[in-house]
Amino acid sequence: MLRFCLLGSGRMGYVYAKIISEHPEAELVAVINPNLKSAITLIENYGGNAFKTLAECRESIEFDAAIICSPTNTHLQLISEVAKAGKAIFCEKPIDLSMERLDQCISVVEQYKVPFAVGFNRRFDPTNLALRNRLMSGEVGNLNMLFLTSRDPSPPPIDYIKRSGGYFCDSTIHDIDLICWLTNDAPIEVFSSASCLIDDKIGAAGDVDTAMTILKMKSGVLCHINNSRKAVYGFDQRIEIFGSAGMLQTNNQRETLLSYSNEKVTDAQPLLKHFFLERYGQSFALEVSDFIHCIKTGSNPAVNQWDGRRALEIALACELSHREGRIVKL
Image: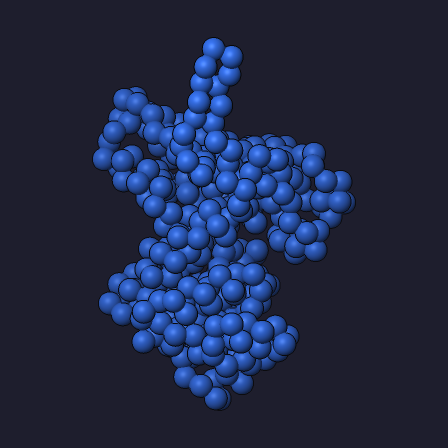
């Protein structure tokens, strides 16, 4: 059994604690949060021991791997401490919000040669995996364009907005990683335009809630991302891949795929009214299983520090493009 230490006991902490507790090859032995009450509440549900700091934990208990899902500004310190202890690391995205600090994270991971995985869970979604496999098989011929729609059912709390790092680093970064993964390519330029159309408080916090981004890849392939903080009909996650020989599309999840049409009306089942924790629940479990497999076999994680670096670099370029109203070269 791999012994896991969980750094952070917020919303994502509960996601990973549940996954670890249900995994046949893993157990949760420690939860760390300076707010000890929060850590205690989590272990009451999923087991383990609660600590305020990683140092206190290491004095009392042994672990094999750490999952870091604490606030992003704590990642560098925690990655450094865990890497120096020689333990495998799984870190939620983004690794950091600063390229300089992110490179420090990479430096310490490289120095201590510990396994390191990044939480871009949407790569592990079975639908997205099937889409990529069919794209790689050549079904659409020469790839021309990608369209990614990613819209939330409602905005997060303003307190979250203020510490999120901005819409592009918080949300669009998932779509950026998917595009690079799907195409096996990287952009040479980006152009982003964004507005605050949903909640004035988001604008007052210095962020946006509606965005469109165009990426031109090294191959010449064009990619379009559209994001919104509020889709009244539910969590909207769709991908379209267009090529010289055809098109592939992923659609939103529904209770059933049944629809009815007559001479007056055509209707379909409404979208499931869930958010990312439900829509991508299976992908979170699959990415943890991949991490466990890598630790046990010595293989490389499917998503590593260099993927995390590339995604942040592009997300920051999108932010710059929006702020300055220009194409940004990469």
